[in-house]
Length: 341
Image (cartoon, rainbow, N blue to C red):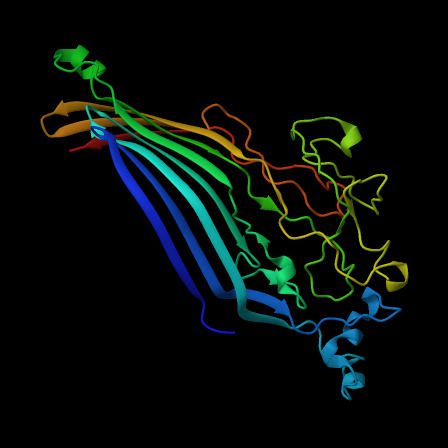
């Protein structure tokens, strides 16, 4: 327990390699200690005949509790403790090339190669009650590589022209933001309480090997169904024959059937699909009178309507295990008209 704290450190070098053009290279890192997380303080203890039907009776604080009969056999249920026991670490290489606004044009291109690790990525994170180190892995917002290019260009057409032609041809501006980035992690979880603790953070076993990833647009049913991002069958109890990479703990929520422990797979091991997005804007300013101006703006988000997939279903108990069923926003067009006076 203690007060959350963070340390930030960086080292950057900046160089103007051409007049108006700047290159900046830097190392940027942060470390967080005593961060907020949540943990189960009253887990169910394992017995040879444990099932999810007797979880409360097996909870730690109910052992030999004389008040159990008064409360139907168990005084306490789950007890979630909010505490400051999580840690984080982030390191990155950041490169920026930019051109300051001259002759009606400017741009900035930024590339980041980084890695963020923690054992809790937010207030409502749930770390394993008996080993928070087992959850130390990629942060939920870990993006290994990202490139973003932004620019503004005031088109030179029509300058010096008068009359209708001058009003129509001058005052145009185009701008845009282009983003390429790798995906964020997704967790492969167990949808049932196979650990028989009632504490959450259940994950399956990892059987080893190189997990196969596919284009989510695929329609190959041999992968376990349509739109699979990785090889998974889901539902029921996948075996090494039907799922060569993951296996559920036990065949049911029963200690006599193999349940009663946490799986061997780590947290947030795999990353989902990345982003390939192009946003454009067109702006036209028209001088109506000396102190009055008409401004028209058209904006195109995800202009090429490139499908941006969300993360796949990581619940091994789901029939959609491994499938991607949702996407980010499609192309969006926005228009605005403004009159300044």
